[in-house]
Length: 476
Image (cartoon, rainbow, N blue to C red; front, side, top):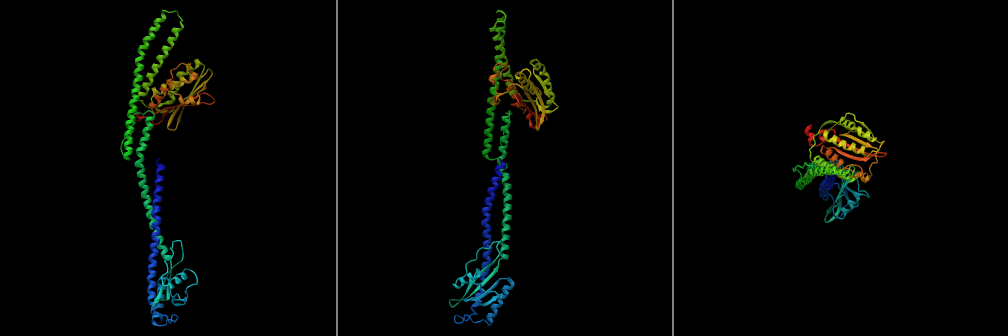
């Protein structure tokens, strides 16, 4: 979840910073240019004031300025150009120069200078020039009219290079960029802390849910840290887990008590049946049927009691040689397989894992018994032990009739048996007991098709103590 939430927060933060940074960058550029324009306006106003005293008035606007004031104006323009590199000039209405620097600079017939000159002739300062950007080269033109007795007699024009202006704008943008990067890094750090703070209780809740789903019903969520809503959720989850555990405990107690209480009356009933059989002719079919059903009922009660104990008991996990244990079970079941005409083989190299040896032996007995029971004469049952990552696997395959996809989804359910095998002896609880025994120790059992025919049962136990249940940790 963090990998999905964190990029979303980063994108939103980047969008906010860009939304703030782009207008700020535009404002910095506009402010820098406005400073330059204001300076040029002041300069043109000063030159216009000098030019007013050079002109002879409306009657002689074209007379050459040769007096001392004209020399002063030319000297000021030349000094201005020499120091700042800004072209400046005072031009009469017809475009001829009163004074200019450099001397070869005149008002062109077209372009930005001509437009500013023509605007100033209308007795108003030229409009602010277009915004200059760091990637643009050019000049910044400002023009002001020279007014004498209410008439425009000349125009002062300055044409400034934009190199320094563009450098200042770029420098301001670099400061903004550095600030944006620093803000982004701080925001990412805050987002990491925030997502960690928010999602940590979710991860704990997810892990605890998985523990409960795999049979560790005593797992609970530590109600600490995170938003108040998640803390309330953790408390509610713990209350739900307590209720579920209590209900399951009541169910197990009921099954165990019922099984135990029914065994004594059933034993007495079977004894009376045996006594009754002594009074009847030998081989009576009804008595034989009653005996068979009574023994089947006794087996069901024993299996129910075993299931209740398996679900209730804590696993005592120890480091076990799974290969040796599986080899022992293969050897123990070999006579029964030979009697049925089934070939039972085992490939059980030394492989360790964390398991309860008694529970795992019972589980393997149930799986191997099931495979031998449903494999026809001449078939094969194979038991293979191998290490698979963090688990040790015991794979039992057979060449029996196998199960359909629908039956695979239900195998292991209590009292469930395939409709094709109802006549085979059994209570339908053996694989349920196996799953309970394995789940108590952090193990699992899976069922799949075995090609070309048959069933493939995979028993898994953890190879390391930390991947098992709490008892495994204690044993380590």
